Length: 427
Image (cartoon, rainbow, N blue to C red; front, side, top):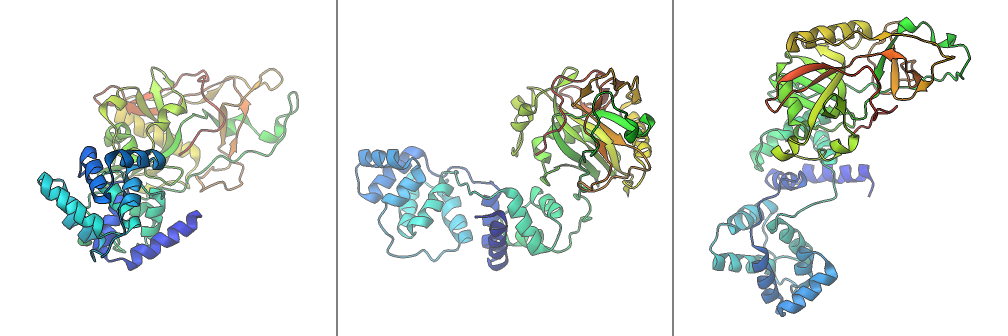
């Protein structure tokens, strides 16, 4: 099934389903499962009893199927009656109490429920009682569907769903409210301005005149990380990837360090795994993506850095139309205020194309005539993917300097990092 078809089906479900049932569906679609209600050993014995087969046959069936919940659903006899219970009633009256009941009462309630469900319904029920319910629908698609129903931006809905809510009719209705008591802009990132290769073919030894003056370019490394925007508004800090995913929960270190930023600040930059004075390979970051909670052991493995290279919002004002040179100067002033440190100014040492090889791990940003921050790939002369490597550059880095999550501004090394490359990886 195609992505858009999934979104349409989800929209239809959330529009037509009573809020009490939709609330629990959203709970499970977002991966917020309930604790296991029945021990695995008891589940094996009680399922074999209900199916009226010996345990060894149950085990053989499991080996053939490979999934306990599905095995039980297939082995149990067809149901003779329906519960008539809605999803919310089934969860609240059967699933939630199941875990706290005495063993005999738990056995009887489980057997009763199995007999009242169809085979497909039992499969879902078994997944729920084991805490292993998963559905092949990305969280972002659920957010898109809910946003369409509520007629709000997906970013706003993602922020609502990320917040504190319970699977109740009242909370679900609030999630779908067309207006929110919070400012609707609090979670809204700006469209990302992606690098657009400059269509000029220049071979070694040829004139670089088409590129213009070197003074009209800023130089910076292309980091191997996750392109992201760090938002600080109304006492909250949020992280968005360029793939329109809210990744706040996956990088708590950045959120903690960002509390030093003033209200109404939005930074554009790159998330990196960091150790010593250099970034680590992108594969280190991949282990964080999709996590809703990062354990202390995982956090202790390496630092997480946010390399900020542009300022998009300052004091609550959208400054994307200002020249890059001016935005960069404001970024420097901001980080100097909050960290007490300032990185070196970007400068060029030499620019001799006949002697200097091209280095693909660098990028140049055009500052002429005014270089506003534009959405998406606009087809403008915005970035040159490869250019001479003989330059000095410094990058602002905001990250916890230790486990105490102090925010610091660090100047990156002036030599190319070994794992930098021409295109950063984005979530």
